[in-house]
Amino acid sequence: MIINIDGYKTTDPSEITTAFCNFFANITTEYRSSTATGQPDFVKVEKLLKEKLNGIPQFIIPMVTVEFVMKQFSSLKSDTSTGFDNLRAEVLKCSAHVISAPITKIINLSITMPLFTSRWKCARATPIFKGGSPTDMNCYRPKHS
Image (cartoon, rainbow, N blue to C red; front, side):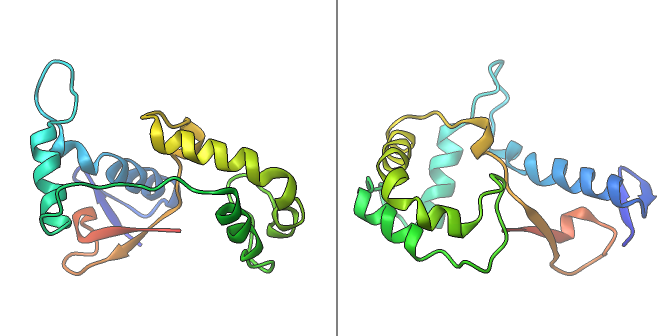
């Protein structure tokens, strides 16, 4: 793979990975205002959400129950690889009766409070080519896994 990074073409996997990471992480900067605080321009964000949600005036994430969390743990596939926490699905399934209540509380606090731990702000993003020049990062979209 060859990618053009600021006019410089590279095939170095490390440079390409870093470039895509920075590109995908900063793609939302167009929705930030040019104010001194650099806070999001909520008028632009609201407009974007209305466009994406077909005019639905509000977006509500419901609280979860312990039963729901336990059901999610029991439905995990045992043959999949671990996530960022390095916990195998079998461990989570076996300990579901012990960890479901605290996990439920953490999830519900995350829904009600506007704070997220930085450890939850990581994702695996694979660049998917959309068409155009394969050396142009704007011709890729992220696929999260």
